[in-house]
Structures are given as C-alpha cells and as structure tokens.
Image 1: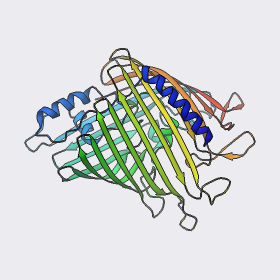
Image 2: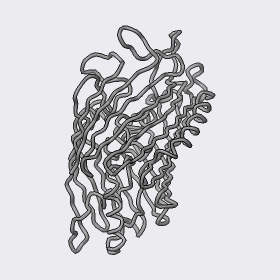
Image 3: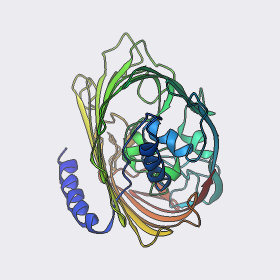
Image 4: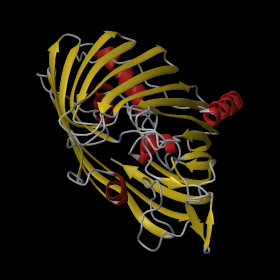
Length: 412
C-alpha cells in the first residue's frame, strides 16, 4: 500500500492546487413536500442550472429537475418523458483490433471509431406517496459495461412513502457510489476514472431512506450483489449511505457495501468490505470533487489465498468556467489493487500475476451551445506503476496509454 499512500499525498497536493482553479457541482437543498410551493420553486430553479452535473443526485432532486415547469394535478401527480443522446469519437494508443472494446471500457470504448455512447428514454412518475422511474438505453456504454442479462435496462424502480420522512424503494438502480456516473452528461470529463470503472455501476435490491434533517439523508441498502442485477450466490450485499450538505456549496457522501464475492459455496468465503467517500464543492466559477475508496476482501491475496487483500484509490476532478458556455477541466487519479481484488489478472514485466496499479491525468475543454447540450474534448495519459505491460501499440508492449476523446450530447 506504500504506492497508494505516496500517490494519495501527491493527489492531496494536486487537490490544493486545483482548489484555486477547479471545482464540481453540488446539490441544492431538498424539499419533497409539494405544498411548500415557494421552497419548491427555489429548488427547481437551482436544479435547472445544474443539469450539467456529474453526480447522481437524489431521487427527489432528479424528479424536480426533470419536472421543472410542469403542472401537477390536485393529487400532486406528475409524469415526464425525457430522452438523451451522446455521440463520440475516440483514439487510443492500444491495439485491440477493430470493433473491440478498449481496456477499462465504459464511455467512448472503441478506438478510431465514431460511435454512440448512449441513447436513452426515461419515464418518471411521482406523487405525494409514490414515485418510480423506468429508463431504457442502447449504445456502446451498455454494450461494454452493463449487465448482460438486462442489457437494455438502465434503471427500473418504484418507491413508497412509509412515513413523513421515510421512503422505501425497490427495483433496479443506477449506482449511488462515487462522483462520476454512467451518463456522460452527469460528468465533467468524457471518460471515467479507474476508480469509477471498478465501482459498481448498477445494483438491484431495496433502499430504506430517512431524511433526518434538511441537510442529512441516511439510507439502508440491500442488494443482490456488488455490481450485478442477478445474484451470483445465495448471499446478499448490504450497505449504508449518508449524504450531508452543510452548506449550499458543499456536499459530503459516505457509502459502505459488505458482500460475499465467492460464487462457489464450497470454497472459502471472500467477504468484501468496500468504503466510498466523496466531497463536492461548488462556486460560481470553480467546481471541485475529491473521491477516495478503500476495500478489503478475505481469502484473496495472490501469494497466499488464506490472507486478506486490500485495495485503495483516490481521484481529484476540477473545472473552471470562463462563462456559462466555456470551461476547462482536469482530473488526477491513482488506483492500487495489488492483489487483484477488483481488477482481474494482469502481468508485470517478469510475467508475474499481479493486480492493477496505475495513475492517470486528464485535461480537456467543454463548450455548451445550450443548457441541454455540450461539446467536449479530452486528452488522458494512463500509466501502470507496477511494470505491467498491459497495452500494445505498433507491435510493442507498453506500460502506458494515450487517449484522445471527443463527445457531444443533448437531452430533452
């Protein structure tokens, strides 16, 4: 873990520098009570200005965001249909062949190709005591990074208001972990960080949420597994979530998942504890986010399968907005999984089986012709730090990869 600690210190230094230049969207205050019309109008207006967010915000806020300006009937019911399309061109210095996905494929997963990241259609319903969403999607993101069993289904869940401040939701969900999303419009960068790639993207199960105060949301979670719609064994994944917004400019979130990742009931249990923390800070010109992850898994070390494996990662993302239409952004990241807890096997220069240890830096620019559209360009340098030559370019194996990405998207 010495590599991780050294690079986290570097990232914290980078964070201090980026603090002057960059930042990240935060969330407005929630108010899910529709009869408080004045407060709701303020929240809706604030959320409309954050449509280019990169955080998966809470359901109540997403609902008000998509329903801004819509009239409700006497029972406070609303239904909205929305759509979103993102197209891209990508080039990678890693030869994987035509129509094959790059290593760590999510957004813009094919090289030297024009493609569609995502084409999606959503229906969202809400009333005072009932809420639900259905989102269908198609494109290279679901093809490269989504569930093979329910590939067309991004999310489908419903919620019931049990008490004044308590909701129970059940179904298929997008992840609530991390400060980057499966939907490119919710991110600052085009591609996602390694941390995001190995976070769970999708989960199926149930959530019990309690709005303890206007600034604090607490949630208990139970899912079929870590990053799966369909369970891989007879165990469930359990978790907790806490979201705290001390000011209108700052949001803090902690998430924890506990699971058994061994699909074979006859072998040793592989108990996984995964911690995710992120902070988001926003001003008029500067956006900034920091995310840190730490995980452990029993009976999982490569050298001794009876011992516990550890992993960790950290990411800093920043954005400076010259105007409401023009901005630049950057991201620093380190990822350390020496025992292949999350990453799948890779080999170093001596052909030794190791986990993924890597660092990366990205820089890019964004132009927003309208509030509901964008053009982005990005360059990324990715380097393995343990000698693993996992990339190949011009018949030579390499420990590094260069990426050039262009993306454009709009929604309604």
